[in-house]
Length: 466
Image 1 (cartoon, helix red, strand yellow):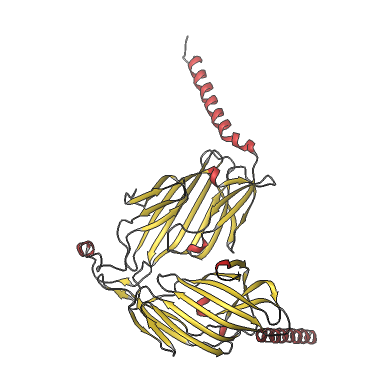
Image 2: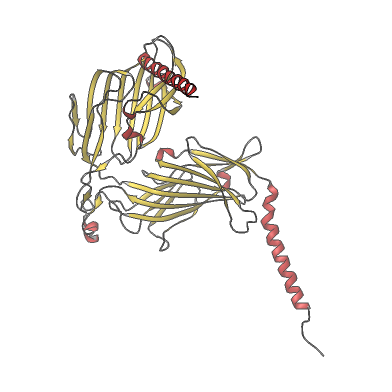
């Protein structure tokens, strides 16, 4: 038995060693001729645009390209997208590419990888240009951590002047865009150039794989750090022609915590100086043809909201009962109705499906935990959801007015949601139209029995006689 275990362990180690050698040889067959990275720090959501010109210098075709991220960024990584560029200048077009997480056995210092699948294998000597977008949340650290009402908010951002990559990079440049030209300090790695609200690192030439050069930026950022700690979004389908949406928010300001006393007089008399990092209104982009909109909290209806509609979109501007400073929180509920024909369709195989938008309608917010609940009509069977990114799914049961057997609820859960997750998703189900008669028949039966009871009461003589 021990001999067999030793043989299996030896085979496993040999396989891992062979895979490691294959990965090393693969990384030597690809090199990056030019890399340009642009990092947008103008809000609390960090957006990184990466342009890579990759070249196959090996002897065999390459079908995938690896992206490397340090462990400190993986925990804050919300989204990774990639596209291949086709054509030049005005005729340039973009073709979306699949990006999936990948584990490698020889990852140095806990480096995490994503694999980009190319549309066509890259032959020896060929080049391809890739456009990559990845988004980081909770990556700006307020410093100082506490500020008074009249102080501006300063934040730290930590990164590397060199792009972390498993490939040799011949030439690379990194640009940082800050909200203003007020830059307190930054790490200098020559050549470095600071002009206005832009900071440039590079160009740097001929750096080996896994080169890393830590840098820190300390700058002013007074944009609202709006974080939705939890959002529960309920979508209820009624085949009688309405789609009812109810959204429960737990909102927080994730910037530098407020210290000292709050002065309402100073806040209103000096709005450009007092509380510049706070926010007192948010914008929600809703679907067109919205109706029956309400906005309330535990106390009741909140009247400080403005709804603007047109045939293409609807915008709801909301104001909490009080302005939000760093560390302050607010809870509220937004509800509205939509016409069913705009979102419910029938597939060629006879199944019905809901086509709705995933994500949070609030502009420039991060949702730590998003739960989308789609309540199907009573009698719906075999539900299935199609979402363009990984989410956790399960089913629940819900009882509403006049329900007999209850409704099936499709529950979708995802953490670390950003505005780029506002993409359509579909929920398919089978439905027999005869179930639409259940509620009318039940109401008719109840009224008929009530009529019979009243008729019997009026015609039956219950009095006692000799």
